[in-house]
Image (cartoon, rainbow, N blue to C red; front, side, top):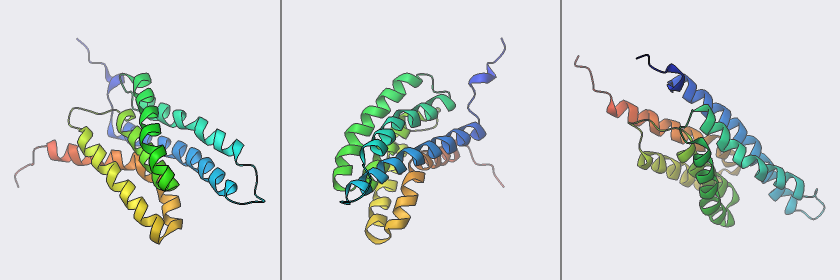
Length: 175
């Protein structure tokens, strides 16, 4: 029997998927933030179109992550990610928009980036939670850094959590 190499998720492919999903996140995140900034000024541009575009791109972010990592149930994962984005991201965004977006995209990343046997949901949730708390602290003390980092951290956190779990599961070689 010949193995099916098309379904293997190599580290290179996984990090490529995370990079592309991060770029898509950056675009969606930027439009949403632009809408909130525009809505907070009296003479600013209409926040409706950028907000609509940013929100319309959210499912695309999760589609990219699920399909590029060859998730076995990509469509279900995307639906779960959207639900998590709404349930986790929006309530936190009511307190702080940047942290809410990070938490929402991070929660979606947990379910859309394909998990291998050694990856755990717990490690992914811890990584995303740490990134959300880090972003909340950054918003308070260095808002510019929080704005830039916020879009880049959710999928990266999941990738790092998976890498740590892979390292832990690999038996160490004696010297």
